[in-house]
Length: 377
Image (tube, rainbow, N blue to C red):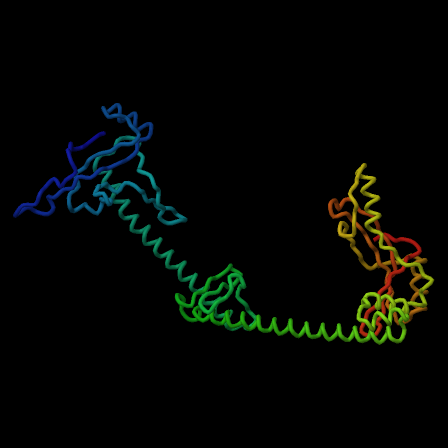
């Protein structure tokens, strides 16, 4: 290690005595810098060790102690690392490395580097503090605007996860989510959690009341359908159906089927549409997978249905005939495609049906009939 002054231990070189000027006090510090390859060559030519990392022990007078930093272990170092440099776009930038020289520097050059670092460090810290204050002000302004907009708009809601409480809530904004805390925020942000919680509780009450109302309507509608089916079976059902109805064991689905037969009696000669998608898929799977033993049920297929936008001449004739026989019914041509859930690439269709629906008391009765031919989707 190159040294300017050989020092056995780190200490003050000059101990003040009565009448001694403070300017004569010195402190032993370590200066660390780097040498480039050219600098290492020059160091060897000058009798140095030629190492990349060089350390010097210097005596710094008291009036230059601002160029020295002392760590928590009491080690004093010349302010050569980190370095600070001016950048045209970014202002002062911090470089966490010691300076590199192409030739061993003298003591005054190291002092000048430390002085430059000292000045730029103050500018760097000032810039960072100003930027921090600016970010904090921008963040507070964003929070203020978000809080004011939320409080002014009664349709706005806080996120339900986490659940809003009188103390905390989270609001979704265009800039992202904002967390509000009534204990740490200031007005108007402090008022957001309580209002968000109030709206959340009000929504829960309204949803609960709406569910109860919907449930009551459904029960009333079910009761109306049940009474209508009872009256219809009593008037039109078979003796055996009336007996089961009186005993309370007649299935409502059976009553609906009987009413459908009655409503569409004029179409009794029309062929019914057969929904045999699972068996069709079974055949397709057996062709694609030889030796397949798996049995395919309705739960193993996906049926996609839609209304046909065009009709063939025979389909139009069939629809017109049905409309003439049941003029109060709604008649549409339906296209059905069936695929296998395990492998959607295995699919069959399209299959064509004519769906007829008609209101019958509180019921909407449906029945699908076979079409004369098929159309593509």
